[in-house]
Image (cartoon, rainbow, N blue to C red; front, side, top):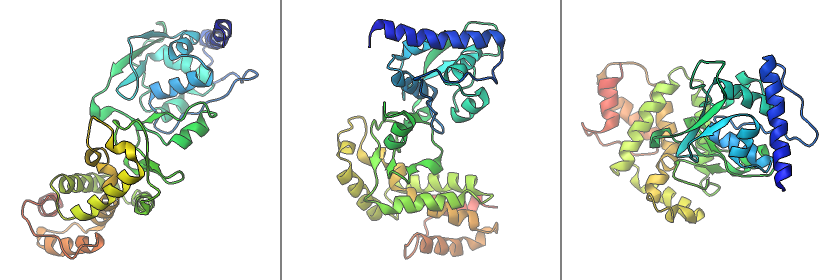
Length: 317
């Protein structure tokens, strides 16, 4: 593509944005020009990821795309280690550029929150580094390619726990340090756990039960308790199907896949905790036996320091 082509595409986006910015008619999204593709955001997609996919679709760099929309870019960064923060005016320019009403765009992009309340200042975007726990993970490559008109299979999303797995394409991304998704066809219990997790969401105590269950299974995993053999077997199967897990230099496969390896048991435990009646601690032994049965274990050792026993004894009211 020549520089003239790039300039023409960028200028067309800028002209449309400026006309509607001036009029203030944000609900009147312009219709697509001939040859223009509409790129839909993925659920929970990072703002930087979405804008980069837009740029890829039009064969532009990200700075070129933003410049064409009259948005000034500050600093440097790349997802998942950094996110793109837009001010109020820039979010409106992005809505015009994508021909998507701003409320729809902010629902799809959870980090698209203006960094100011001013409506009169110039549109600006700024890169900001993210802490590890705030970083997005890789989206399903096939879902991304479909949403990107085949131009890219790379996107980064802030996924909720119940979207850990893509059941349609049998992919998952449990950790931001993974630059490639994990294929899970050989571990069918992960897809089954995904379906069970969707049923869990209908329970009124789903959120608190999930938080407790994840903390408990993470502790068991890190301290090699109760389900170690099962989890080691599952990890081995995942590594066999995904050689890149063993070549990611910044963490071990056991750490990179922890949330995925423990996922079926975390869902099972969360469903059991959500269904338990709120009774005094004298029922702890009975509850432990019930949960052991649900997890497919003969029993759960009655250790006073075990996180599950502590939860049943001291936390549940």
